[in-house]
Amino acid sequence: MTQPARLPWKWPAALAGGLLAGAALGWLIGGQVAAGVAVVAIIEIVFLLSPFGHQARPMLTTSAAISPLQHDRFMTRSRRLASNLRDLRNAASQLPDAVVLLDRQQQIRWFNHAAESLLGLQRPQDRGALLQQRLAGSALSEWLRNGAQEPLNDAGAPGQADGHINVSLLPFGDHEQLLLARDISHLSRLEQVRRDFVANVSHELRTPLTVIHGYLELLDPDDVPELAPVLGEMRAQSKRMGQIVEDLLTLSRLETQHEVADERVLMAGLLATVRKEAEALSQGRHKIILEQACDADLLGSPKDLHSALSNLVSNAVRYTPSGGTITIRWQRTADGAVYSVSDTGFGIPANHLARLTERFYRISSSRSRDSGGTGLGLSIVKHVLQLHQAHLQIASEPGAGSTFSCHFGAARVLAPGKRDTD
Ligand code: ADP
Image (cartoon, rainbow, N blue to C red; front, side):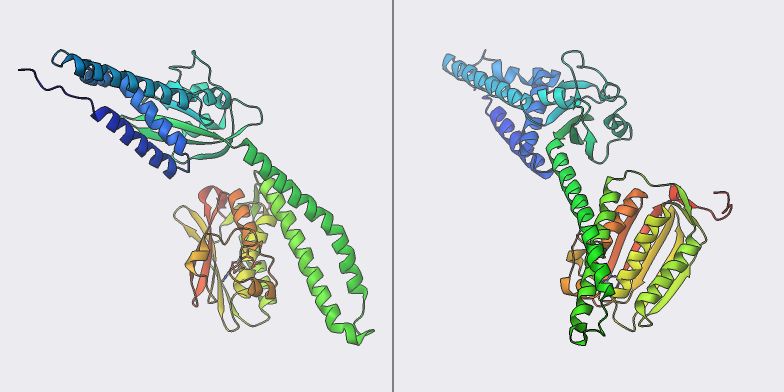
């Protein structure tokens, strides 16, 4: 009796399932559905070409025990499958994102056309080359050397003079990896245009505002008592506009800067200044406490750090009703030091926390305006901290108060002493 044929229905099902999983994976890693599908297609192609694939393929071609009709169906299906795989490989080749398949030693096994233009890989000589060596001298090579745990955002494209890419490395199979690089040159240029526009507008507004402010200061409300309230409001608003322009210019400078001066920032003096500023702003409405638990100094830009630390204190005063307490702390931690400002103020609902450092993001515009805010303070704090490889942590309970903490790494913390020579 003839053995029932082992029809290869599982293959198209596995392929379709794989592609669906790929689409889901692509979607999960940031909307790159096409890349996810291509990734799975490539993995399946590689599997087919691998020794395991060889073991599996007889299922498709063995026809000794099947009838001629079944054999024909087999052949048709396997031809269709081969043609589908070819299509998928061709589609992966044409993806606008660079795709590089790496073996467990990070040697290049396969790459698509975009990898040639974005990463500068060359066919056929780069097949089998070590990717890190091939990209030596680029930010990408450094990132790979450091383990590439997190995606690399906005790196220079090794294959293009002015190109910018976002890169991620995904593990799959038996310690193999897939490198995906997306061309973001266009976004980078737009971002540059935005930065230039804001910087130019702010710069152009500065002079006329200074003139208006100057004339308003010259006018004496006693000369025109009926206009005194109007004059007062005009002065306050022109001052506010001036402050917004100054903050925008500060932000533009911080955004384009890649590193800060490595100066010793004397913390005892800075903390005393920040405390005095808080007292001046509070006008006796709050209790202000300074807890200096260590005498460590910081390494960085005194001007920028002053701006960041005093912004947090100014916020604490402005968002804490009269009678509240504001505590400024400076202490060592196991891996550096922390500057924190706690208040007993309005607090911040949890759903706002993640967006608080965006430009002009406010929980209540009227409260911010009334308290003299520009909506740019926390953005400035974030950028200053980034430039010092530090980060901001916000803990808050609505109605109870907030704590803003700046965490500095050990490399930025200096033991006290040798003040004059540093
Ligand atoms: P603003 O000039 O409006 O204060 P910031 O960037 O400094 O701008 O702060 C953004 C928003 O975060 C503020 O509008 C306010 O809603 C909220 N915020 C900041 N600090 C505090 C605080 N200590 N307590 C409560 N809310 C705060």
